[in-house]
Length: 512
Image (cartoon, rainbow, N blue to C red; front, side):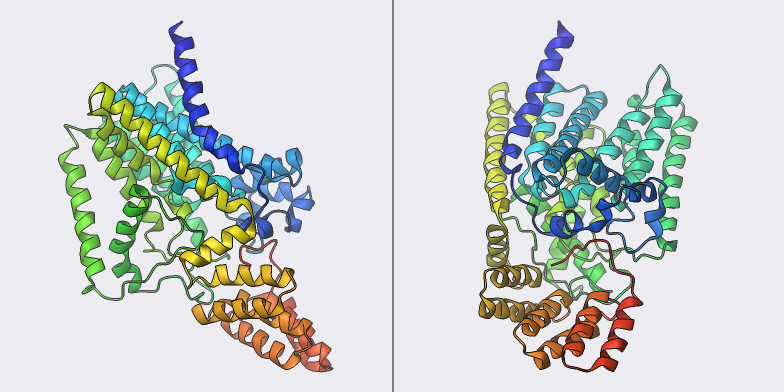
């Protein structure tokens, strides 16, 4: 009977978490989903699944997310099950998210034995509005799948009297799958070490066994990182032309504390949310943002250390945040310095802290507090999902919140062009390159628009600018070749076409 009661409680918890997410299941593919999924010819060849399962995409820079074959495998499965029906793809992402919720709550229960803290953390994590982008958009599934396997890996390394060796081996396999899902998983061994330090009773008593398991995990992560560095594809913004957004040294160092502050703010007050948020780099250690961020970092570190014995759950929450902040701190420069989806693996740490605070209220206070906070999260989540109902809503909201977003302006230009408003499209493309002169997509789309209007001289100017901004890109050279050919300049068109063919075309795209 007790087991059945527990099962009903688990089912109820997951049903509560799932309910708000149902709002967006039938919405169309938007943003990177379009170029990565339905418009990507890679999925139309079943033989490509063999390339994914044998790891050959790891070394193929043409394949979007080629470094993440575990994610690509789920895409092939969804393609086989649902075709190009967005609802099916979103059901898969939601099921993975619910799996993360269950694994997180179960992990906390095994570590602390505290039912309310475990359930509350699961609910608050599952409903957090800042996770909307990662869960709702199948193109960003990597964050969800990575955390799923990280949590499964941690379960495998927890103490088990029966078949302990087999379960730890399973934990190692899950860590490999996490690393094949997203690079963020390199931080997982540090989290495992933190759990061993904070909750030693949950792990084998032999110190040698704990250190051996930790060493194996660290070795796996280090091996994958070395592999990524050796592969021909660029690892995020390290390599290739500057995109006008990624941070450059020493901005990477000075901006880290400000990024930490921004992350805490987004988790604490998850509104407004934006697919293209703004971030102003910190250029000097004399900046007030640098000083304030260092203060928050120091305060969180001090709190985590002081609480390690009397309140290990608090130390776990702060530690979890810091550990998974490291991969998105831009010490290794990312293509986009900030994004809502980056907080997905960090959110469990915040949920643990919030659940711990609630658990120390009176019985009525904690129940009422959890209900109130969960209701607010659910409301904000549904409001956010409503912005994904159409491209017009999504990009209008994004541009309103961040008028300096070249990506939002470019998408709005495309929408104006589809509506037959060439003047409106031209204005948005101009706004995009004014906001970010390195936004090659805006230059290319502007050049194509002018070519359609027969303004070949202006089209050539824009497309040549695109080749200067990103000389390694094939699209700009291909469109320039078309432009030159239409002007009767066959020899120059051949040269441009040769430059384009020298750059293998990518399977899909992640930009407008």
